[in-house]
Length: 247
Image (cartoon, rainbow, N blue to C red; front, side, top):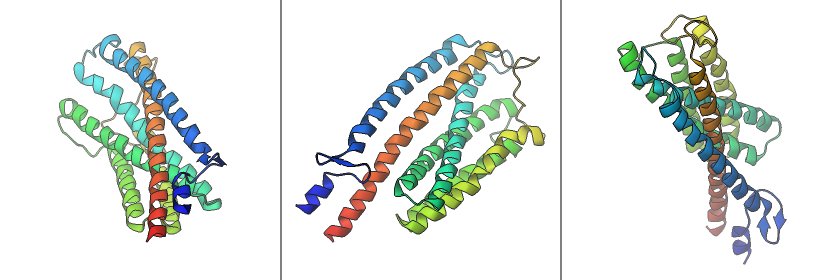
């Protein structure tokens, strides 16, 4: 009976009628984020393939830009959020913060992997090579390895306090690379151009609008995926505790 009662409850929120408030809150959040993501993503696709004119120099290849930039943004945003959650966790340990950080890492590594793949796909026809040791590319690759290292550590150490603390430290250290990625084109000469708006050679207004909408769409997609990953982390932790009790 006690086991059945615990199964009917989740691991965060307050009990209301045998159910946790989280069970009511998170599905609603997921639905709202899902709808907003679908709407903004649909608008982004239309802007990318219909509204925005083809670049005179790069041709159709430039359309990769409208996916490459937002996925890079989402990948870096994930690590910044990880770092913020990690700092709070070190001062005020709460497993829910750790679940959020781990969820952010799982989603962020997906976005950053897509970023690297799109960058290589874009770079081949433009630069003549799948990969060049450009400052921004190298810094992005380092961040990707930080993601992988974080997930490997969490998988190896399991769901322990030591694992959560170690993950928090990695998240904080890795976040230092985010401003380096952003400012690298200004600090070192490389293949990546310095983004300019409103000057000669800058992106046209249609392209700027498309990128802005795509950034919003992929940010919402990140939030939606993070909520799902957080729920999975919570359920996996509960399942592990129930397994230990049964054994």
